[in-house]
Image (tube, rainbow, N blue to C red; front, side, top):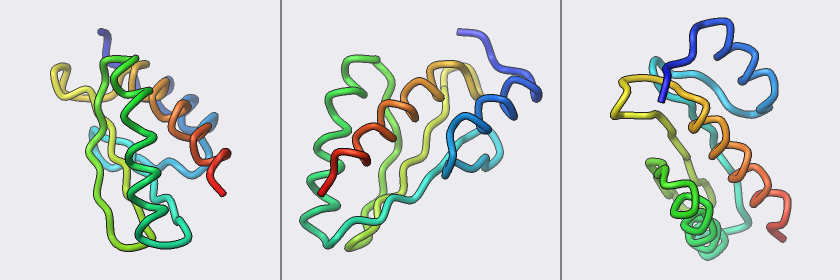
Length: 96
């Protein structure tokens, strides 16, 4: 995978509302109804992560899930990170 340059990262972030850059990662906080909703959301992330072969870091705090994505093997951000972010965004749209 090829690292994205600064312009590519900015363009990709513009297409992913809610995601923010933090160094060599992108991150987004999802708010759910409660702890059960948070755990169910994390469970739903498994399918696209496995299908894409790209796995985020996840942190649960009652009704919040923080998702952090980076291509660790490349030391930065690649197209794969933003593809996974898009898949995770679609999951949020189907949550109750």
